[in-house]
Length: 402
Ligand code: IPM
Ligand code: MN
Picture 1: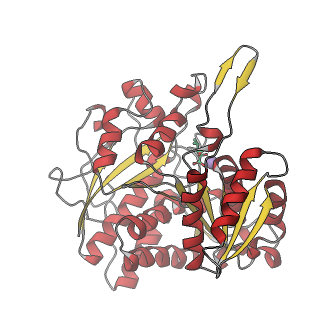
Picture 2 (picture 1 turned 60 degrees about the horizontal axis):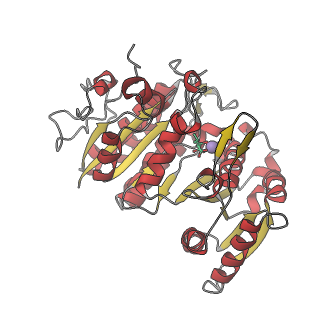
């Protein structure tokens, strides 16, 4: 299968973790006989520096033309003073909107090797395997009116019936492939938008008599996530609550760096780790690439329909964790490695499972991210679009050009 993957490394630790994820995808392509062409594009603070806007039109166009989009992280404290529509984060929001992504899947699975890395007691957290389905295109993030002046800041929480229906359908359909339970999270004791949310979800549940539905207020859910995390299956919630609860769910599994995500609903899927740009860790080979690599696995599954390949990559992550490998955020892993070392350990496991040798080191792929200053220039693809960068080497070096 030949596919084109748009790669948006973004800011902070984004380029480092994406480099490992792309190298894993390259190795998957090699093992399974696919051809993946990667093209890198600017977004976030990196794009503000280069083009004075957080989502250049050429980046969005390239994403819309690709088969899938893999993103690192956005956010750069150097741009914190900008008005909200011009900050790095607004590039990500515009990208989600531009791709029509309204259902954000954030699976939080506790790997058995990491039970002692979780801040929650072993007997409580063991067995945690939940999926947050976060509404991604509406709610407080996008509601109008919104404004900020000297003495007043305004945001609007509004949901329409179709907006709730379309994301709820994702949650119920996904629950059918899991343990058939949906927990819908809202604040219906206070907010009208939540009352509508609850009404629509309750109505939809009638179409899914085989799926159990419970409603929780968001405050109670925040508590239950630490008190009884293993009791959750699918957690369906709005944009802001989903942002907050998914960080909480992530850390249950050992570290925020563990969680992948898929943003679906449009023609092109967007895949990104749940963690942020972590500027304090950037460039130090400290960041955990597992969330990014897990996002690459979700890309294989949801955008390319390559279930065996996705499962193989996820199994390789599990095997590397079983062998004790982990970055500094996974406190209890005995074999402490850096970002690159973790990626390499995962690729070794992938190669071993495939019965082939892992590629040695960085196989000398050509493409540097510094080339991004040229709009529309294809980087990350030896031989231009249509060629495969499936060497198992790492096309994205992550250097931020001066
Ligand atoms: C996330 C992030 C983003 C969000 C930011 C960077 C805009 O926190 O993906 O969870 O709030 O959605
Ligand atoms: Mn977040």
